[in-house]
Amino acid sequence: MSNLGGFTPEEPVIEALITSTTTATSETGGWTTEAPVTDHLKKICLEMKPDIEKAVGTNFPVYIPISFRLQVEKGTNYVVKVYFGKDMCVHAMIFQDIQRKLTVLEARYPKALSDPLVPF
Image 1 (spheres, rainbow, N blue to C red):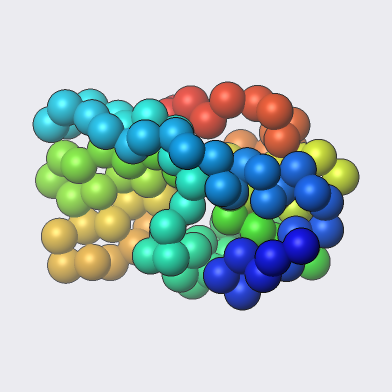
Image 2 (cartoon, one colour):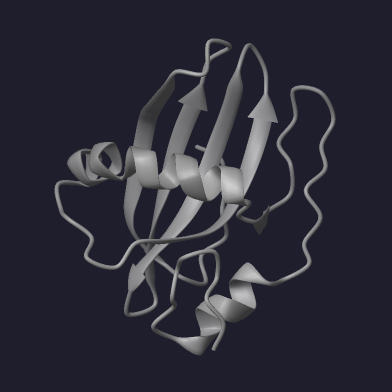
């Protein structure tokens, strides 16, 4: 199994999700389609991990960003799917303002790995 940008999946299904070929495109103000996380999004997810854990009231020993959608509008809204084990994920909404400040707006937990990533 490959090392996915510093993340070592505990299950083969994670590698398949990360390496899928979904295209992320959108109209201005619209949401992109779901796509595998980029290195930039991995960094954001790691930086925001404590805030996501606080939002859902638990710590994640396994924490692997899988996919994302984004919307550009007075900053960037991200909704990300983060795997935490046993076919379960957390979906988190993160906002990055034009000064690049990050804020976790909301997190939904637990979610099944197969649940679609829908903006909320």
